[in-house]
Length: 202
Image (tube, rainbow, N blue to C red; front, side):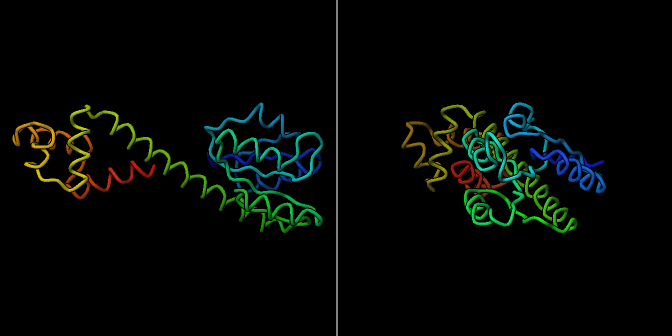
């Protein structure tokens, strides 16, 4: 069984059961919810996977749930299931960040392919976020003085120029720079500059 989970939100229990059966045939974990609110109450954001979401539901609609998740910075990939009259609505949902939509009646294999793509996308997204978090942790481990030296290294200043700027000896700057390289696991100055730029962009 894969460690990915497909979350199904559909108020039609017959449809939810049918989707569960289909998705479990490819050995994916499935959790079903009868309403958008039930999903919000029970969702565990640490579980990787994707959300298969009906557009039209009583109470909170699928689009409203999408808005709530975006407002909470929850980035689970969403595949909307739409009826024929909902295609324009689904296109708007994709423009608002949904991963995909599929129109009823849909081909089972087509849906499974889209789910696998959404799960792969989620894994990539989580991997990038883990790298960003690791980078932030490395930068957080620098002392204020090391950070000041790093900022001037990134600007392209020599040790001598950094020493003049910070009122230090060139030897002290060299020690700080070596410590920064060690803490950041950088093999070269160009590595260090790239890491600093990635951290700024994160």
